Length: 168
Image (cartoon, rainbow, N blue to C red; front, side, top):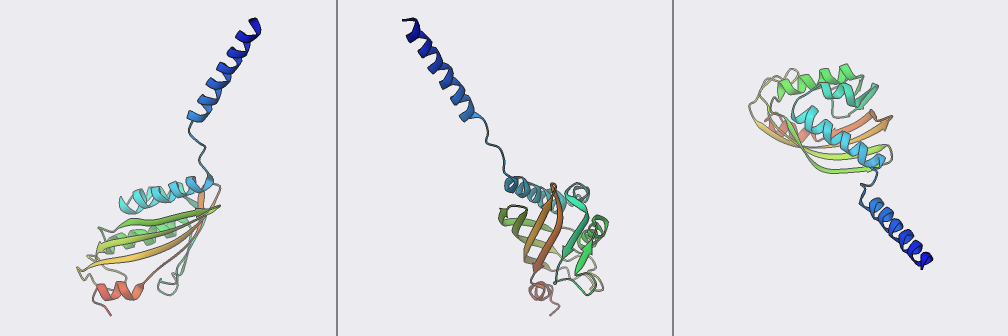
């Protein structure tokens, strides 16, 4: 009888232990962590125009690649250079925001598709404001190292953008 009671206690303790383990939240993967950082960057840095978020998310040696940029700007290096570019973008498109369409992560890389919308109410380089609305699809690949974005490759359809602004 004593042994039976001990066996029941062991079974009960084991059941409670296993139940407690199954109720705990699973540990996030590096892919989930990296996707969360990109979502935060889009929501806070881009949609809320909070440039300080880039100080926290980008590596000091951050590099941004884009063939869609004017000559000399295809490769932007450093946080301050990137923030300067974004400031100019927000001057041209003060209401710019992005909607995340797709986000995929594998290891240290995150791929994202966003839909950007805005009205061109400020100068865009030497292009005067057109006051026209635009919608573009953006494609970006981000590389992470030590929980920071170290590199980004981005592209969009410049001809579609220029056509919507009445410039092509």
